[in-house]
Length: 99
Image (cartoon, rainbow, N blue to C red; front, side, top):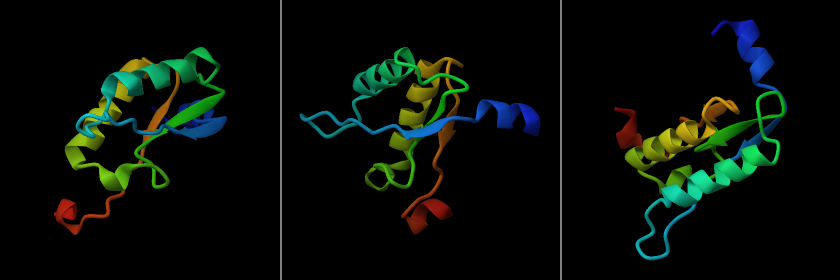
């Protein structure tokens, strides 16, 4: 994707997607995450109107392992299904993950 196409798609509100957790074991609740993304899309969060931000600095990234962040991101991208752009936060608070 070239710069002009990217700029035309990455417009509107950037919405941080919260990470839902299961009460039973505090694992990421992937079905709930998918439902939330679908809710956003069904209510107008689509290309040209907004961008979904997964794992952003103001979100839950600091409580998730690397694998949990990847799993959550993959679920959001799959559910978004090219209907809305998805961007990822790639920061970490763990120096062990930097190596």
